[in-house]
Image (cartoon, rainbow, N blue to C red):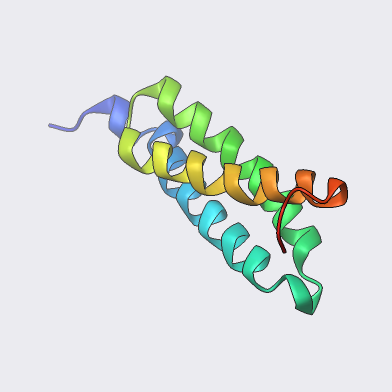
Length: 87
């Protein structure tokens, strides 16, 4: 017997959030190669999916890690024009 709550699309929020967050962090690390705009897109998406995953209460650890991994590039890229982020 399967659990219907774990079979739905909400079970993917944690993994998607973590994946997008890690790719956003890698793009941020490759800032000098001009892929920072991709990190600026992937970071908020990771945050969004991380929040949805935490609300759905499925894969909460992955959702929290993805939320954190998405917040880092988003915050650093938002603070960069003000000279706060040391990139």
